[in-house]
Image (cartoon, rainbow, N blue to C red; front, side):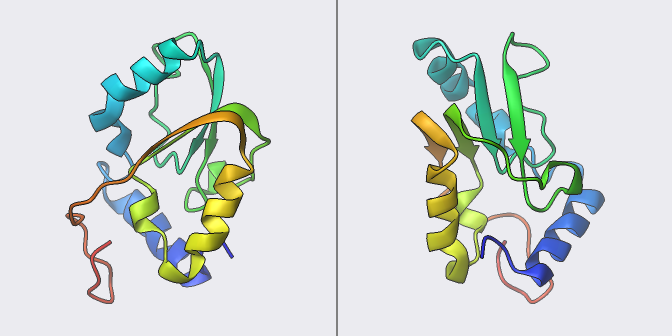
Length: 131
């Protein structure tokens, strides 16, 4: 299981209510650009794309957005040579971590750039947990 139904619904609502939620890749833009140029990436999966604001609009690159909490991007993408996953994995439900990592690994063939935030989120979930 990649995400529970309750958590998916809560994240969908947070995405609708908060225009900044799901835009974490902005803080990784230099690291992402370095990865793209160093590997001559032309296409990649943005795993946990959130609002889907990543790079495709200003770089000559194709992005396959995937985020189970965004209905328009919840369809499982096909594997690409490269994958980006920034500010996502720290939000995975503990009981789903193993399945998510297995799924993520199945979505790239060559390299992935992963960035995991180590500080607490500014967002608190309905049940009082830190997002």
